[in-house]
Image (tube, rainbow, N blue to C red; front, top):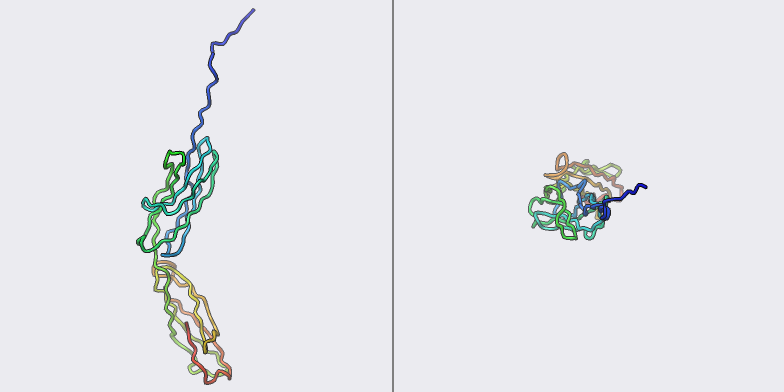
Length: 212
């Protein structure tokens, strides 16, 4: 008889599972924002480890946490999108340097972070409106009065302004115009528009058109 014996007396080797490890993918930052207006930042966070885990994801400016997505649970190989919001004010200065970082809740600390992304902070749009010409002047009943207007944006950020033509307090024509700022948007920060009104015989001897 042939007897086969094994010299192995221990238990099979246990497979080693890697702990959770988090990677930030596809971060999206604005290049510019406006004081006192909220902006958003997004990114995907992926767990590349073998084990499930929980973490916080933080939006940071020069070491100061601006917003946090807390208690995010990621299974092994799972990826989720996160979104942050922040409203800058004058205390932030002219720019902020944003970083997204992961913070493992089990104590291993920062797993991954983006390189700093600079966001320039701009003064909001501010408008002045000036009539450059009214034609014909005076206008007769049945004619069309055309009022040429310059809309100037003296702020740094691009913005939209609604300009109204009023007669005796009644709006008779209006137009919304988007105008580039001194630091944002393409083209001039002055836009020219024309507002129109056709008076009737009942308007004879009444008020003067006003643009605001």
